[in-house]
Amino acid sequence: MISEIKRGIINHKSIKMKKIVIILSIVMLFASCQSNGFINETGQKVELGSQSSVDIFNEIDKAWAATDYEKLKSLIHTEGKFTTSKGEVFNSSDEFVQWIENDYKTTIESGKEFGWTTEFAFAVKVTQGQDLDNDDGDYVNARFTSKTDGTVYDEWYYIVDNKLKSWEQSKQTKKKNVDFIYDATYLDEFTIGDDELVLKVQQMHQDIIKKNYEKVSDYLSDEVVFALEDGSRLEGKKQCMDFMISAYSKIEIEDYKVGVNFAVTGENGDEWVLLWDNANIVSSKGRGAAYSWMESFKFDKGKIVFMNQYSKPRN
Image 1 (cartoon, one colour):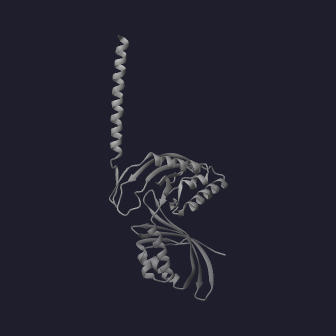
Image 2 (cartoon, one colour):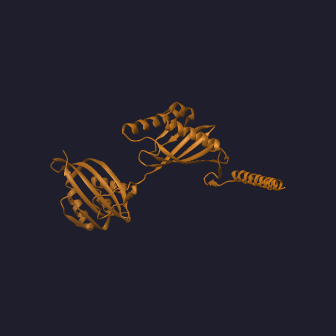
Image 3 (cartoon, one colour):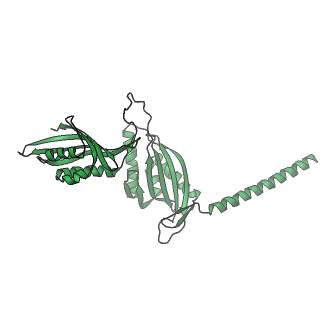
């Protein structure tokens, strides 16, 4: 009797569990058919993709890690579009796989570890759109952490007919925690700044060379300060402009070249452009001398408020 009761309980539990599994399966099937995103530009909806596309991604990932380039080529369409985080674009499987092989060789030759940890991967697909070529397959999104330098990569794999049709890569750079010997007294945290400010500095130099001093004046704030190469200091737009007109009107600047120029933004919001440049200075008597400069320009509301300058003769 007890055993019959046990069997009855077990059968009841088994039937109940089967019902739960069936219900969950129906829910999952229903959920998989629902849109969970959209593409605003085309009006398409985004849905969950297939496991088979994730499986193809896993094969690609495995072949890439094993440097099995023939296997890798077999998983990639002959023609496609493959874009690296540096903006390099390859339009064939041969070009793309050659880049992968070159990247491996460069890493090994530098004595660094080659490899990565695959953090996750999932597939999505978009609903069909009129005259669009983005709805033939699944998009697999994957994230990796490089064993070479800790860089985090996000990549999109467009899988069509069980092969890679296109690939796009972006990266995040992890900042290393370094215990410096000396702490910076001004700022020790910078990010890459606004390239428009770099362009303004270039335009100002172009106008200086052309002696367009009215335009030069437009780049300066009324309270601008120049800390010049000889240690002198000029304060205010008028004093700075008088100096430049007096100095540059007597010379010609030839063969002007920029070595380095980039913008940075400090953690306190200060915006700077750093410039290394060089040129030949020709006097009114025709005598020439080559110089190199290192200059930093601080901006506020799009105007230069401070300039610090160093220079040296160049052989």
